[in-house]
Amino acid sequence: MPLTPLDIHNKEFNRGFRGYDEDEVNEFLDQVIKDYEIVLREKKELADKVIDLDERLAHFSNIETTLNKSILIAQETAEEVKRNAQKEAQLIIKEAEKNADRIINDSLSKSRKIALEIEELKKQASVYKLRFKMLIEAQLELLGSDDWEDITKSDSDERNELVREG
Image 1 (cartoon, rainbow, N blue to C red):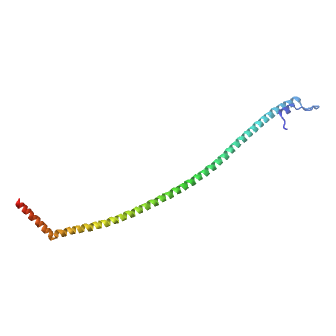
Image 2 (cartoon, rainbow, N blue to C red):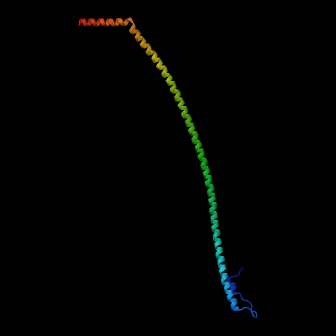
């Protein structure tokens, strides 16, 4: 067990025949007591400071551990978000490709339908043209026939007679 300032103060020495000067020894012991008290006080302050620093170190170590865990969780979360975003992007691309295929197929179908309608209209136009040509030819033939001459003569004759009678 270490000496205390009180142990030093209460220490008694045996007296010898021409021993040390008692006042000088007491004065020296008083100085040793003061210095020893200062050293013990500093030692206690340093011990308290070491305890405080150890507690702070433990606190900061806990914070460091927590931060490291948080960083790992954030990295894992970021990776998961990235994976989810990639999956979603792939789904969007697949959906867009399906829509594009559907639109292309619809367009091709409509294009084929329009082409068939155009062909049908061309056939109808051809038939109409042929019928119209036949009608015109029949009318021209009628105009060139002798019956027309008879009709126009008899109409003229009737008009002339009507005019004469009138």
